[in-house]
Image (cartoon, rainbow over all chains, first blue to last red; front, side, top):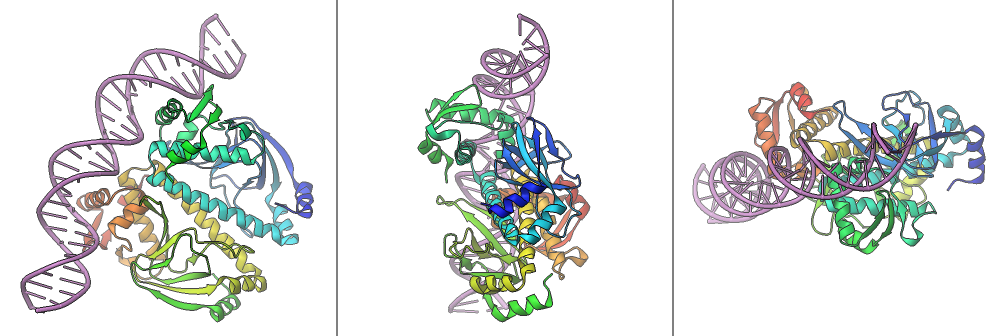
Length: 217
Length: 217
DNA sequence: CGCTTAGTTGAAGCGAATCAAAACTAGTGG
DNA sequence: CCACTAGTTTTGATTCGCTTCAACTAAGCG
């Protein structure tokens, strides 16, 4: 993804950070001081309402960029709360230093743009899920999404098994349902033989065909 | 927004196009040949499912950029169908020529990035609407959104009046409801004195306070 | 082991969808 | 200018999927 030069440049200004599950990395509204990259684990991008309702608007997987990059706008505040869904390892760097780096390596900015475009596409796909899909379709879509993401990150689903990085409550919060409904739908998939689960979080086997079918489109 | 130089450069390669309401500009899946800017009118960004369900994932107002810009990826296909919600006037330019222009004016790319970031933020806010808001909140949020957008484009809502660019069906499609529910909610707001309407599309007066209150957050 | 938190399951209620039809608009041609 | 038609919007009655409320069970942790 990044060139050798860009990586060494990044390493020079970066700092490793560890967050344990549930810990908040940045809070919506706070001053945005740094960017980061996910090294290991999964983070939640949360938009919260004053009345307590929240919506997880995105997940952060290994290699994902954290923060919205905008050149010449260092005054910005964080638009989302970022919380560790699992234990989370990230690699952070100060905004100013990163901006200098993009001056030396303009291609870096183009790559950030490409990532932002991908995120936009994903967000809009999720809008379709939230606006038009049924409960069963939402859960199936989510499961496939996570399976693919963890497969892409190497370890995990080679034999069709993977770990859910989110609790039922978080899943519900991401796909616009309640905990109970998510639980019920997962049970349905289990009964139908599309899933095998051990201990709530570990998917030991899943029938991709069946889930894709159930996901709707 | 754009500098004098950038504008003259754009004008040199651009071509004016007119679309009448309902006409399709580009179709999801087609080869992406050009970018464009909205000059006048409103466009719909549509994601469609094979089974007929659709979701309007975004609206295009005057001065909005059309197309997802990605340098060195000229092979891309359109991710969304774009249809004229009202009569629509756009200013289009070939992808290749535009890419050349960003080489001469690198700041252009930075500006595109900034726009993409804004769109991403809007898309995620809309995710909250679709995932967590009630019917009344959705309609109120939409009305404020349109009022502000048309106010920003000069003409229109100085005296608190503006034109709805979308049919009830389109509104429903954008906020994840049905036509009937949208209609009912608008009637409620009328009865409550938060809106005055003439002929289904023309909002002659609206109580911003009340709508913001009803929008939830 | 007991305590706390997370997940499952059941019953009842409700908000929005669906189904159905009337009222209104806008466009067309006589 | 009016009658006619096609499409949009409104309104009403009913249904249904998900939420809510409540209780129970399983799992993680001192």
